[in-house]
Length: 88
Image (cartoon, rainbow, N blue to C red; front, side, top):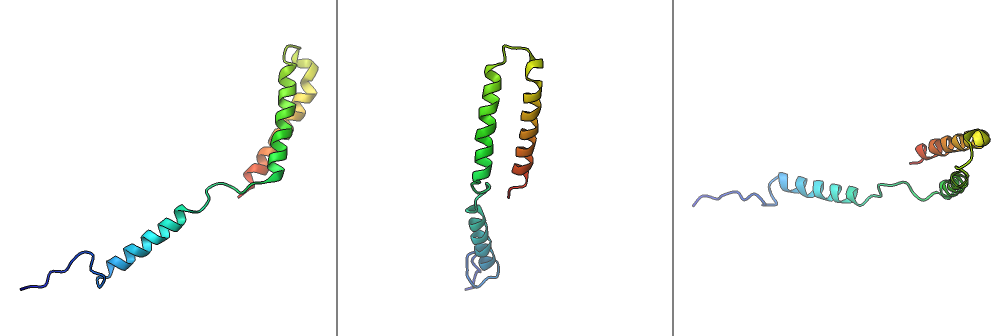
């Protein structure tokens, strides 16, 4: 009777390699995929939201009255965006 090599025989070289690959992929899948909490980013977001809502409430008045405030808000939004891009 001939001995038939089984696919999942631990003596074959590919089975330990597959097991290691599964473990590595499993550990990689458990890693967080978002940046850690940043209090600075949270405070910036809340402050910009409040300023934005305040300007929206006054949207029934002409744009020219709020041109400076809108320009300042856009500048702050760009700063917050650059800060967020730099986070891991």
